[in-house]
Image (tube, rainbow, N blue to C red):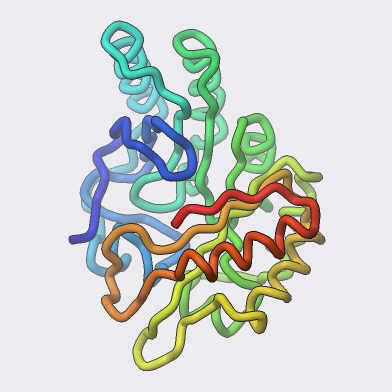
Amino acid sequence: MTVIYPSPIFGPVHSRRLGVSLGINLLPADGKVCTFDCIYCECGFNADHRPKQPLPTREEVRSALEARLRDMQQNGPTPDVLTFAGNGEPTAHPCFPEIIEDTLALRDKYFPNAKVSVLSNSTFIHRPAVFEALNKIDNNILKLDTVDEEYVRVLDRPTGHYSIREIIEGMKVFKGNCIIQTMFLKGSYKGQDMDNTSDKFVLPWLEAVKEIAPRQVMIYTIDRETPDHDLQKATHEELDRIAERIRETGIPVSVSY
C-alpha cells in the first residue's frame, strides 16, 4: 500500500531521522505532485495518483498549522520538528517562501525549541526565493541519491530538466548550511540492477559530498512499501561501511536502517 498524506497538516509521526515530527504537506490531499518520480517513493508513482484538488493556500496552511500547534501545546505531544514533506516536492508550492516565514513565526510562538525541517529533492534550489527560505530553517535537507547521470534517471526519474552538476553547484552555494540525504538500496527495476552500495557509486558520490561540504549527511534505505516490488533494503553492514567512509572525511553522518 502506498501512502497519500492528508493536507496541509499530518501526524505527528515518529521519524527515524528527526524524532516526533509534525508533517506539513503543501501538496493536494488526494494525489502526488513531484518533480521526481522515484521508484522507491512511498507515495507511489506520479501517474497513479494524479490529484484533482488544488494546492492548499498559504492561509489554509497557516491556519491549520496554528490550530494543530495550539492543540499540541495543550494536549501534547511536544514536537521535536515541524517537517515539510508529504505528497511530493514542497518547494514547488508558489508560496513556499511565505509559508516558511509563517511557520517560523508559529514555531517561535508555540514550540520555540522545535526545529523546522524541509525534505527537498533539490530541484528548485536555484530559485532565489526558495534558496533564501531554505537558508532560514534549521534543517535544510537536500536529496542527492547519486552522481551517476544514467542511474538517477532510473532511480529518481526527474520529470523535467535535471543536471547533477547544476544541483551540486546549487548545494555549494549554501556554504555548509545544508544536510545531504541519500537513499541506498538494492534489488532491480525492470531487469536493471539498482544496487548503489558499491564503490562504483559510493566513491564518486562521496567526492561530491566533500565538494558540497554539508554540515551533516543522512543515509537511509527503504523503510515502507515501494511502488516497485523488486527493490530491496541495503543491509546494516553496507550502510555502516558507507557511513564510515563519510566519517573519514570529518563530516557527521546519521544512518537509518
